[in-house]
Length: 279
Ligand code: FES
Image 1 (cartoon, helix red, strand yellow):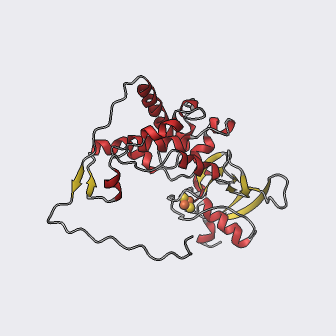
Image 2: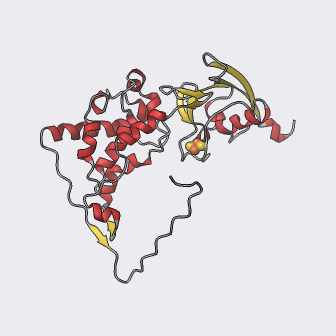
Image 3: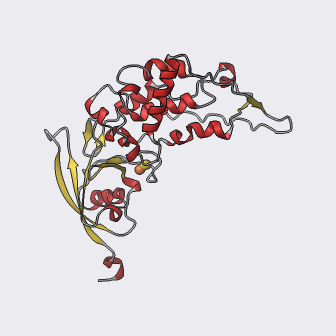
């Protein structure tokens, strides 16, 4: 056997398959892939698709742990397929399944409608104090390193859904807003440029929301980006209680730093024409 083949190992992948047009319920199918050091789960899936079964379906895009679309359940733990090397976690067999707590569209493809609806519900954008400045900026908002640190960790979220999959409250309460959306609400509420707390309050303070988290902490355990949603939710509980007791501190006004007169502002880049007709 040559050196290249010596490094390869046969690993068995048990993959949950489901075709809504053919199957009444999901079932496991078994594949053997030739794995060499450095090969990710995503590479293994491509190998199966190319050489064994072209009907296998899953989601992916960036292949570098940034877009969040390849999240799946790997031997019971939610992970990013593109970010996980097979030989790091097994030398024999793996089971792959779609993310639980979501409906299944097909094979390893979950229906993430719930994730995106929850995200939209918390208004995930900066709501500035000065609408005119937000619309036609005259400079940049000043933010100290300390103000940045307050929300920076929570801004690393890539919306992969791993936290929503690991959360026991998500599993039992179909209306629960979930750790991703709640952590993102805290991320914006804590941003010194944002004044959206009052308009988010009706969502984060409602039932099936912040106070339904009983701090199992699994969301933070599985987050591939180290976001720590469990911490964000506990801090948001504190903010809501302080607000209820009328003890919540008001944010300081966020200064706008004008552009120095000797700095030439770059002209904004015009939007390219749309590829499809706008209605
Ligand atoms: Fe983008 Fe895995 S393909 S995170």
